[in-house]
Length: 107
Image 1 (spheres, rainbow, N blue to C red):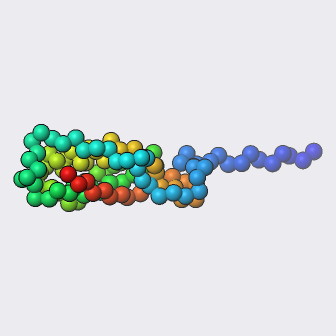
Image 2: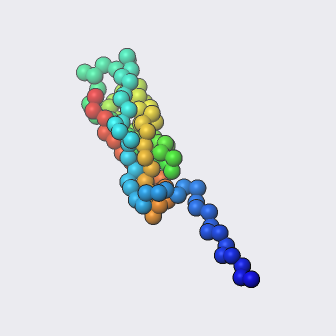
Image 3: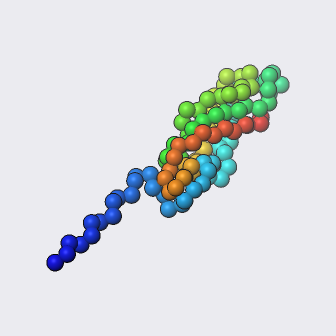
């Protein structure tokens, strides 16, 4: 009597039914909670650029300001907005991957 074929190997934990997609926000980026200490007329720039990495679960990590406003409180608020944003992870060949991202806030 022939042996039955072995079961298929288990799928990796980061397997996705989607074949490929770029990392990005689910909907819009979170709003910046403007700190009360910020006087917009005193800023050296009205934009803040934040870079980050989206992990396999869609969370932002390694969040840092790459172009600041001249106000540390506002720059920190922009980083916090990125951390509150929900992301979809990058997917390649059905596997979720971490991927870099960047966003520029205009205040």
